[in-house]
Length: 229
Ligand SMILES: *Cc1c(COP(=O)(O)O)cnc(C)c1O
Image (cartoon, rainbow, N blue to C red; front, side):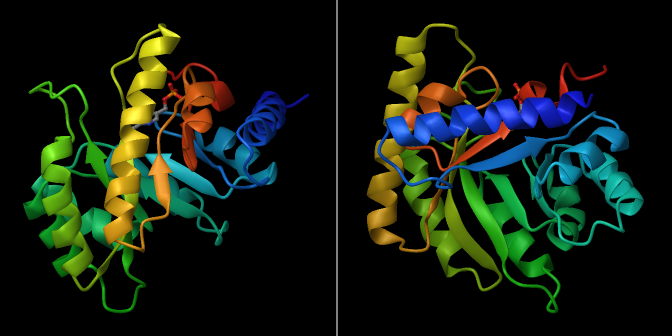
């Protein structure tokens, strides 16, 4: 019995049902496994079960894990945590995607520091819907400027938006937040044709996220169980 593989199978079934329910083709939603604070053994189980996209929040932890997983050469690594400017070199050198770009300084540094031998870094702009001062993410108002800049930087590929709406069990509020993000995504993508990714939905709200147009859900707990603290 393999709990991670079982969880992955169950999540994939739900994703397929939600894709069908929203009239979208099978495979239109990518499952990103959020492996922060999870042990290497569980990441290996998820990879063995077929997952290829993994998300990490802390640079040092991610580097240590990548070192231990060097034999798995075809994994795609996504940085999804808040970014301090002294971490941009390590992030730009070691990740394929960054979901949490929320200011111009970070975008510029990631582009400047991307190694010449690597493909452009895939970037999502993180949106903060609730405009809470303490949280990461840019406001919907500033997103247009940041998309403009990211699109113009030589070593970044603007792929879309990411958001973590304030947690709530109220499904109406969840739907409303995801609708707002979906609309913003569609507005911006009219201008930036490389945008094909709406990264929204986590373990407790990925159903409404997919129904509102998410193309990438980030699941931690639903796949790996509670994170060890
Ligand atoms: C931790 C984390 C997740 C996964 O959260 P779960 O509720 O465990 O699915 C997704 N996205 C981001 C940005 C995270 O930090």
